[in-house]
Length: 433
Image 1 (cartoon, rainbow, N blue to C red):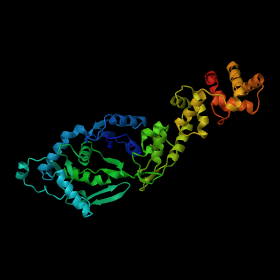
Image 2 (image 1 turned 180 degrees about the vertical axis):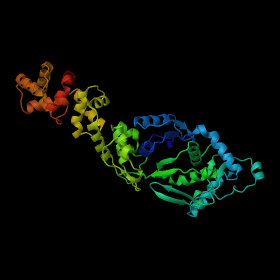
Image 3 (image 1 turned 180 degrees about the horizontal axis):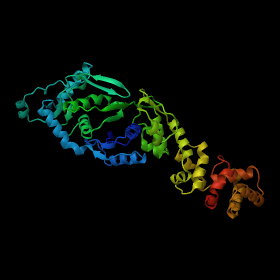
């Protein structure tokens, strides 16, 4: 069993989507189920509706999963497991308040060493705990031995007890912390493979410690994906980078198939450059993912998007642009030499159908051509239309072709009119309005 476990605290970004896509591909390759787990126990950070937005985004990318669960539905189990740890003396009630912990953190900061809990409440006897009326958290005792695990990309890890620490598993309001809820839920769902970003590496030893403390000995295979860097700054992609937002990319006119293609390419050795997720399932190998961070290059994504636009069915492309005519799809592809996104193509198509103001240097010719075109009979070929226009207007050379191109396309450059006309001839009346 695999799981994609987003938090409803923000919109899905490139890193999230990469984790979702790799989970999907490996679930298919390993013939295992993939579930979606909404990690919503941190109520103060949850944003209403973000869970539905995330699920909708997965549907847009055709990421198949078995079912959706909400972490908050397991709160009673989280508490029961914590009680068990308390009874077995593997966890303890901690009455240290924020003020006390703040002073402790300052002390560690001055000594320039990582903060670790000092064990103040770890050895309180049962009577001291019973008589204490203050609010408390629950901390799990740090392990006696090092925590060892192997990551498929990063290699072997050996984390000593000091670095695991006696960390909080239940907050004062008795809701679970991230690592505790994550570890329990992975147990409950019998998760066998965990794929996530390398920023979670420090959490892995804590989650293993929780499971081991509860007697859960089943191995989980870990795959921590290297971070994605902003190509311009060389720093980790953040929410402030527009390119990191999947919604922003889609709104800018990048196809989901192209975004997915590029994400699989990032830091990966693939047998080909342009492919679908279905293609990738057959040859994907997690061992070929680089250990080093990958750089997100928007221009590379533009190239990939352009290639997928060339391959897309003409009628489907037309519908994406707001039409239902194969000819409009073919027309759109004429602009792929100068456009790479749906938005850029749509702008060109919209120009054709928008109102045109007369060209200053060709005002007379513009008016003559407009009248001629309105009266012109239907022609299949541009050469026949051109012959008719020349005969009716006596215009030729620049005086003919510059204003004629402008009347039809609202531009003075672009693909040849002989290629454009057969695709827009049925709309000519609307175009020259």
